[in-house]
Length: 396
Image (cartoon, rainbow, N blue to C red):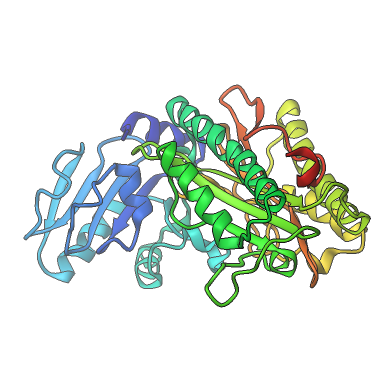
């Protein structure tokens, strides 16, 4: 819900003179979300909405779409010629020193780089220092409200239950000598989601043996592998309630199709689990102390555990990602590898912690979701973190 009062309060808190929201034909979905513009509303011309730290906002729209932002507070400015657009921006930004836009210096965080370089260049030519709106976006687009967090928890009940369904299905199929493949497990998960009114944007990852060593493995007709006794299996699944306010739950667990898990698997799992728990402990510690923390710092803590164990080269992705209405949300990622994510972890943030070690023969990932509530209490959702590889034929 758009709130001018709250935005202006944050602009003052962050020491900014204003926030310049801009879009051209859906190039900046973040700006549209901050305002709450419908995805069905197509605007064919460039528009700007400038929110100053104090005073009235200014709407800049083309003459053929003068009412595009009519429902939002502020002074309306209409342009026809490109010269009038540039003049309008110059007038709006006169005397302003630091403004936020959906921009990331050096494209360090691609998720934020929504405004094209040319527009940034023109705004800077007006004598304005353009800074990233990353933390503003988190506050007004990525941080969850109480209803959204509850929706996440409701989804997490079913994503956690999916593993009970999966491991039981595998155990019963093996005992009954029914042939099953990775695709059959995917089908069972999707049926479980449908039964519980969950939506997912992509089929889950089900990787057997060497397939689990591919972090983004996708089962196809050519790669679909039979599941047999003695196999190692990784299952990564994500879903949300089929609701406009639905928030994803994203979990990864591993199992062994047997009664006793071989040491070669437990050795790697234990390292991954220690790295996961180190990240969770770091988040709890900094919020208990009231110390600000950025995404890359948590990634470093996780990665250090795996590097010290001698498997650093086999941990080939970031520690975690923001979670929201999309599986990969627009908040701070737990990343110091693929990007240097300097965005702060804020109250209301939901993100994954999912370290992994990927070897040629097999790969282990352990993924949980972490939420920092509005009282700075840290929650791990989706059930307790996995403590050991599930011996499927012993436990089910």
